[in-house]
Image: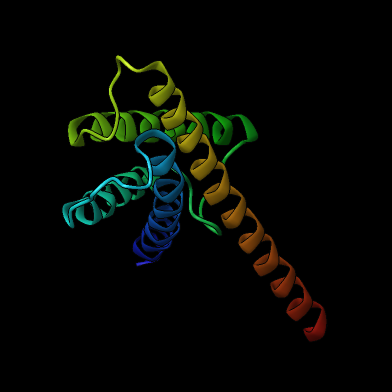
Amino acid sequence: MKRLESMVSFFEKIAAGILFVTAVYIPIFYGWDLELHADILWQILFLAAVCALGSIIIPLEGGREVSRNSMLIRTILYFAYVNAAVLGCGFWYGWFSFHNGWQVLGMELAIIFVYAAVYLVCYFSQSQEAKRMNEKLKERE
């Protein structure tokens, strides 16, 4: 159950990040007059779900302890997974062309931005939760 809650949390943050980046990416590469169809919303939701599913390699808070090196490797693997998923889906959906280097660079920057934003939001929320738990433990002493 905890894993499912974690994945839903990742999904929410990733979908919000993709929506934000889409709002910036489209006007830069396609202009403000581009007509979009509702299917882009389903594409964004599907991509967010695919990316959230990959978070299974990230250990849960309060779960089995992993070494710093193991966590670094898992983080890199998750980034590679997200990168492949976004580039694969983005190409399949026609969001960009590999023939346009600027679009590919834009997608890479978007991937890095969303990944870093989700990572930081999760880190700070877990840090705040740990502080709250430590304060409650001090109160019980």
